[in-house]
Amino acid sequence: MRFTREAQWPLLTLLLTLFLMLGLSGPARAAGDLESALSELAKANFTRKSQLVDEIARLEDPRVSPVLTAFLDGALYQHKSSRAFVAFSGQDKGVNLLSGESIEGLKKRDFRKVAINNALRGKLRGIMAELQLRNPSLETRRTAAREMLKSQDAATLPLLKRAREKETDGDVRDLLAISIAQLNALHGEDDEIRIAAIRQLDGVLYPEVRVVLNKVAASVSAAEAKTGTVEAAAHEALKQIEGLISLNKTAENLYFGISLGSVLLLSAVGLAITFGVMGVINMAHGEMMMLGAYTTFVIQQAFPNAIDVSLFFAIPAAFLVAGGVGVLIERGIIRHLYGRPLETLLATFGISLVLQQAVRTIFSPLNQSVSTPSWMSGTLEINGALALTYNRLYIILFSLCVLAGLILLLKKTLFGLQMRAVTQNRRMASSMGIRTGWVDALTFGLGSGIAGVAGVALSQLTNVGPNLGQAYIIDSFMVVVFGGVGNLMGTFIGAMSLGIANKFLEPFAGAVLAKILILVFIILYIQKYPRGMFALKGRSAGD
Image 1 (cartoon, helix red, strand yellow):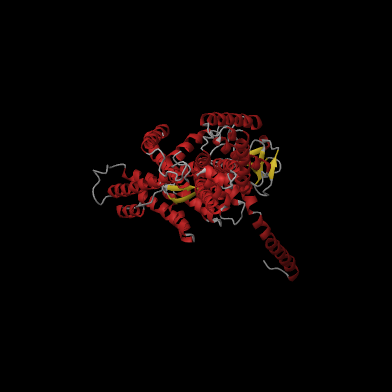
Image 2: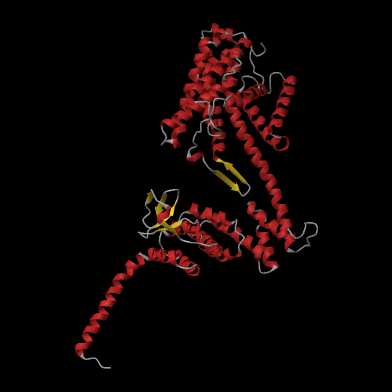
């Protein structure tokens, strides 16, 4: 068929128009690829859905991850009238997956759920893992690599190899290498590959590795496994790992023992000052700790948006509150009872009851929760079997700083000189012009203030309640008596010794029996050495 010149122009015009329309619509269609894929996903059969999931995963669109996450969780819905796609996050709340807007007041009956089956769920888990391993965030990739250790599916092996080739961070690469070795140990093509993979897992302390090795070695006992077999290699690797785990368990107990010792140090060091200088058995010392903990709670309630810096204000505030209450107690009651230890003990016990009831009246008898700052949350992972919690690590450092500051105060200041003079010989100090009464008041306030600071630390380990101090008062007295009354170095060594001993006894004897055994030991020790490990030197030491 031949076209005349007049007939060719309309045809060329039509082709040019179509070409321009396609060229102009190309970018617009690319921008709407996710929306169009979702629209098809909502009505497609499961075979087609599997293909669409692959297509969506390949899109360079930040909305892909939340969309696939909602689909995997069974929370992907399409609005019946507007055709908008929503991820339901609550009873009537959701998120528009394409616009990112939060929506409230939704009625589930107005939406149609995008159906999913188990086959799609399995596929989506692999896709989500790959997306996370490609995520620009290092922390996200590290978390994803750590989660992949739990997988025993051989189908994820190519994914892990691709991710490891592209990974730039050494820690993430190591985690991926462990996952690959696990899968090769389970599903290797021949024994040589499996044994080589098992040897790569030697000394790796993650629990998932032990699960895999136990699974490999389950068919044959260690005694029956023949040398050079896969099972023998697995048993050998398990033996080595168990030895390393035992060492790490010892290190963990030591860490928790030092942590407990730090808490005992904070709670006892103030008592060591008041008991050593003044000879007052202060049964209200635990309530000073309670006041410090409640001061932290009040500051956090007053400034809820400043949790991360609240402790820096709570520490001096707790010191002033507890120290001020201590000075009032000494000036109002205790100074009239010097030389009468039984009456002092009963009076301070009564004060402790009054303070507990006052707190119950003001704050209610229920425990109060104090938030932990973000910089104290989480753990420092040393290896797969040992992780140190940041809150306890900071408390250890804090207790050492408090002890160092107190030693400097006693050694380098006029007040410290006067306190030491009163401790060694009260009558001589008084004759030299030292106002022993005010030294007593300020000393009692200092000990109480340090107890308040200890309460700030305790608020990060346990709930704050009216009985908080009662759990530590007996332990504090044991530390002071065991270390040597009035001796700070003895208090430090005593606190650490009792804390570590308690944590090493607990796995064998239990928490209650461990405390009983320690108490019996201290009683026997005091029978032999009545002044404790470090006896206080001075003219009044033997009074």
